[in-house]
Image 1 (spheres, one colour):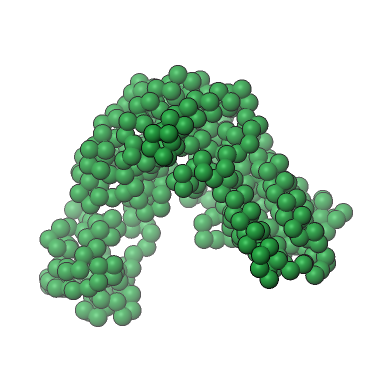
Image 2 (cartoon, helix red, strand yellow; image 1 turned 180 degrees about the vertical axis):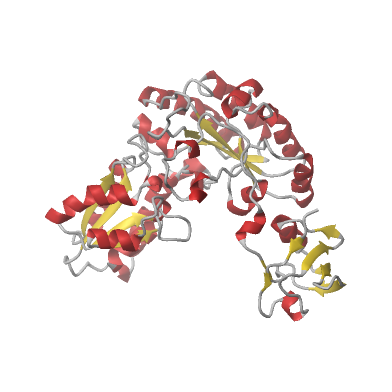
Length: 444
């Protein structure tokens, strides 16, 4: 069994006060072995602990610890200690296979790790989930589990994931359901594969797992221009999107009438493809999968409307006193009509604001990729700089979902600072929230 070597201990933490140091080995907590971060996180969630430590000289220490339930012991370990499990599938729709060469190595890592499902919200296919790992999820009650389902047809799932072990998805769902492990599901929909009648059957099968399977998202396949050697796939057209929405909404409305929640939610892209309005916030029943691009536009619009209303009734709704700054907002092509209307609404409340929208065509991945989360610095520079030379901007706002989490770096490694220097303008990331956007505009 792999030993859990302590990388470091936080100053003044419980273990620091008990003279535990880097290099010591964490053997067990309350008699259960500690093999990774997940064991550690769950085993420390108690008020009374017996912690077994092996010191550098081989001496075994038994520590009796009384603490608050939520208190950490103070172990420091790098992210690498998680030992991410990589994907064993070769999915026909995998976007990582469609990345151009020359990007940073971390972008090419295909994770399929149940620990990251819990810790960071990643979706897993369950094809490399061992019986011991399944039992650990159930024993520790690790949830919610975020699951890439795609289809409940065993033969079709084997074909789509190109893995002969991918067909037993229902047995995993049943195990989670029987043991009350809350789940969220995802379907990447591929035309001529798992759409149409296959989607109808999948939705019918999955609604039986509600409410333990608390939500299900359906997102269209994304296709870049870097598919050399990959299977030929096509994108959804408007007619496809309309038919898909009709099928999804039939189940959504049935579940909403029966349970008060819609259960299954199409991503925003389907509404944009179909050319029909995005539903109001009530449609999304609390936005259970907003991080998956489901309901983001509705939530953003509602947030802007609410923030404008609040400011209208407060002193914050004072007139903008200057027109000296021109402010630009970057976006992908998909959200251009929506944001254009939204900026017009904001300008009705603040007519002195000088706002411009800069929709970016994605040449880096291909013009079929239209979401703001996949914008790159090279595309922004090439398309915006010529416009700035004729009509300069003072401040450029970029949706934070285009940045690597916790950084100011785009997918092609341009930073906001270097991009701003190249453009001769200040660039700032802004959270995908109406209040954050209004605050950024008014503070500018």
